[in-house]
Image (cartoon, rainbow, N blue to C red; front, side, top):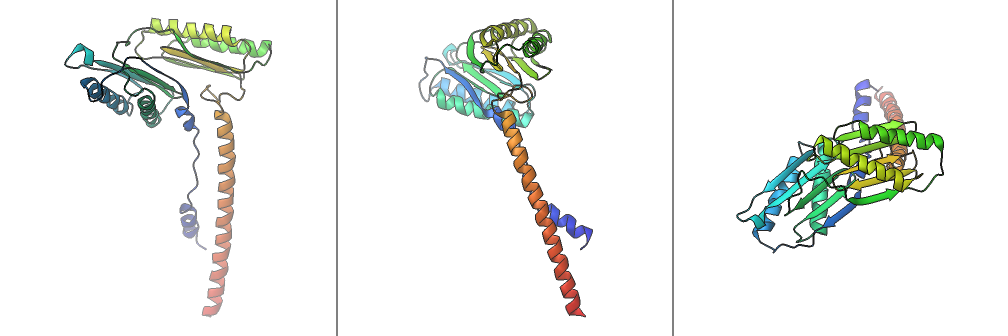
Length: 282
């Protein structure tokens, strides 16, 4: 059995590749305006153009906003998307496309809609909201209380303080077993971002208390933390994220080991046949 044949046998086996990026499409919240547009109207045409622009732009940029101007002021539509700061561009594009599809399903024929998935945010409306700070609470989630632990709470407060003072649109931090992440919408100024994140963090601390994880989403920013429980993996990215990684990793490892064992058996079998054929040829 030659080395080249062994390499060929290994190469034709398709080893599965697992991914934990599926949590980026986890649905978190949505909202729709009450005002509706007329089907087949100029506004619907402009909205379709806007949503197409959002999806296309997400293939090369993690944030963008668009304004589609109509023939009348009533036909103008504004929109933006924002991907989580650590998302690769292919994942960003996939997430935005899913969010746009979800918005179309949930906010059918309404002038405005917003969808937040774990990995991205999409919003559009006929009333301008671009560059406007919004600290309205749109989603709050607190995990179960784990009781007051001075070390854990101290680490959590240190992580949240670091997020509040680190600056930038996307912020991550960690201390001990605590991980945190915060992000602002890209249309906010640095001062508005700082103000929004500080508000989200303040609400997290007051509303979630000694919870093992907390998510606070405001209109234009969010802050999240995990103390290492079952809610988030390394950067507070999604419920059962760590569990998914662990189980899929075990499954992949087992399949690879099984595949390698199959290759070994196949090599032995071919060697046996080669030896038999060699004897018959003599």
